[in-house]
Image (cartoon, rainbow, N blue to C red; front, side, top):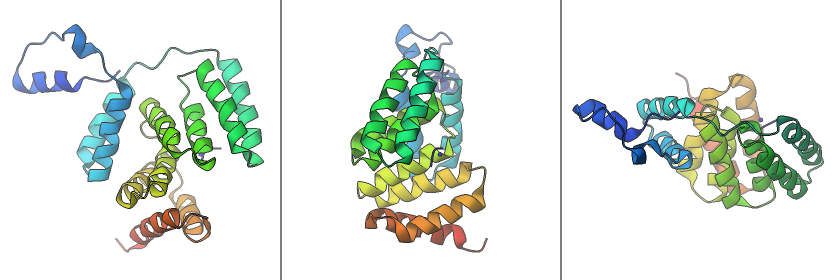
Length: 207
């Protein structure tokens, strides 16, 4: 857990078909959240090639203008202090303020998503985590938290796929697997336990 310029799809089609090289003004308008939903759908479908392609496009997409980083990071630290005391509702308020101060910070977006998740606000948590992935599509902990969102929504297959994607991007596979193994038996939500147990079983198979 946290502390865990898009090439247009239409332009790719034009390049593949030899269509006109110039993009229209409408083609230049891309909703990163829609694109990241395409990324997540590819991960759920097991389409690794598409995951890599859309991830690369997202990483090239211009990020939101940098806001007041000092204010945003101060709010983030205060939110984390509340988080450590399990005061997730209050932490989410500060993370949302931090995001308002600097919408370009993927960690803040993820922290907001996880705090919303832990405070029972599952749908808003999904939106915040997708925003984090739009900024940093290979952010392992955001994928992991998204997997927990899907688990709580009763979307077992989607949850497993998101958590496995988190594992693919993690910098410490052993520690990550240890965390999954522990939560697979201790999390208070049986749907989360089931998703993580499935993930652990798959990752523990030889080969």
